[in-house]
Length: 106
Image 1 (cartoon, rainbow, N blue to C red):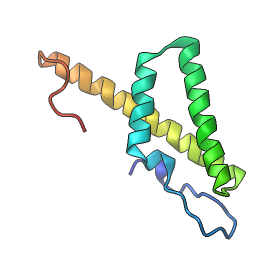
Image 2 (image 1 turned 90 degrees about the horizontal axis):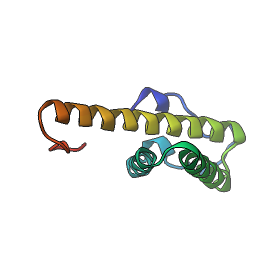
Image 3 (image 1 turned 90 degrees about the vertical axis):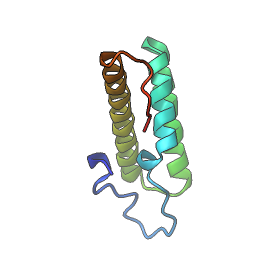
């Protein structure tokens, strides 16, 4: 678990539904990182805003408090950035070894 997920709470209320932290949803994080690698500029910004707003809306529907939603979206954003850096690092390492794409993917 990355530092972005440490001590992030969903809500201070007494709700019983505890959603899985979005930042821990590996497939969602990887999908967003992959998309962001392939689009740039205004398109990337619009994609990112849409994804983060959709995530916030899902958490709101589950009954999460606004401050918890904000924390979870920030943690998710951090995890996507970490994934993008990992992917970039993997590409650099593969290129340095004379091959691309990397033989093993996390």
